[in-house]
Length: 50
Image (cartoon, rainbow, N blue to C red; front, side, top):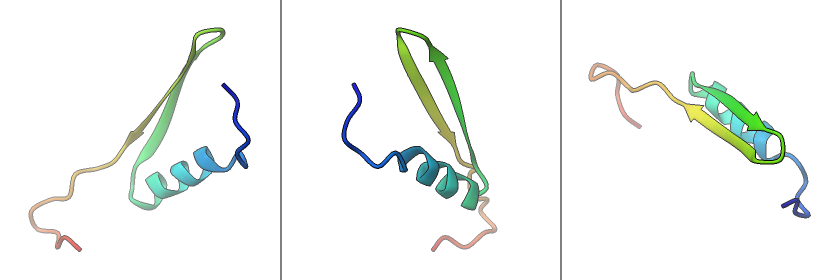
């Protein structure tokens, strides 16, 4: 259901995903709902973890 949010949640999530080299996809079926998937790359062993 629709809440009283600002509508920025998905835009922020996409920005964070892109900042980390990832992406976001959506699959939506009218009347049934939507699924949002954030995909992030794995860090290689050679990269330092912060």
